[in-house]
Length: 314
Image (cartoon, rainbow, N blue to C red; front, side, top):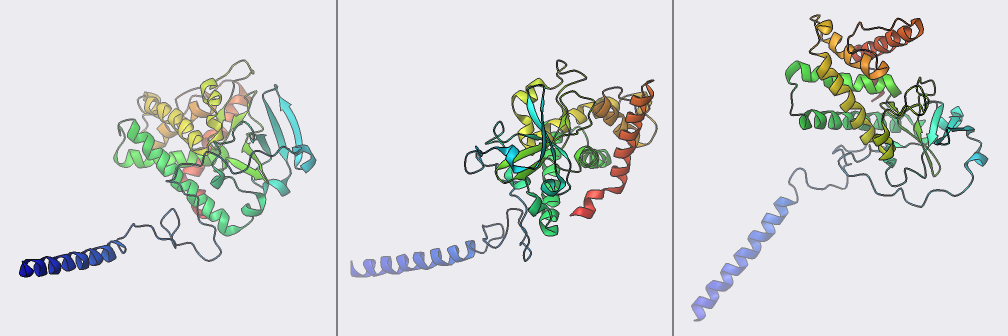
């Protein structure tokens, strides 16, 4: 009995030492949580605000309840009520940081759906390192949303064509908004508007999703706005990209875009996305003003696709 007890004791000690060694190895496994790395897996540079955590679901709240004070007393710009639907603000450059002029106040209606990591104040925007981190985060988010969309649609595109379309998605968002969606001023949040849209209720957000057609009664995306899809930059990207993808899948089959140049299909899809007129890259209105709008829109997308200006911002 004494010999059996001693063997059991030695065996138990060996088990304990093996467990200690195993635990020490696990602590050094790559990919384990490291407090010195940000959510993107990159060590933050000195003084640099790390990018928002893109793989973490947005928080359900933005901290304290929406401000109950009078926004008009902040002297941020001028306000106009649009069709009794939303407050449109023309915001002073000192508040916007030069990111745009026309915004919609979404503080109350979007509370709980805003992704605050993408909603920078003017002071944050003026910091070059924070600004670069913002563009890198949007770039990652676009990749994530674009690849998710293609996967959800059965990965019908592959090889060079897939690469071309994913690049076109980045160019589209740049053409529409210069990759902007939110503006934050203290505890108020705004979503960027076109300000010069043909749509009576304007185009909203990073992909400039149209709220209406030429009259307030001609609603193009009632379900999208009813579900507050404009409140989230992720949802806005997903919705806009889905619309563009559907256009592209039609445009790629049309003989008018069968020119041997992939750009014809890209522009045909964008012609429909931006103007609603045609899926052909050369389908233009007979109205001179609208025709000019179409040409400028497609030329802009082509220029951004070729030059990829976002790379200089990161």
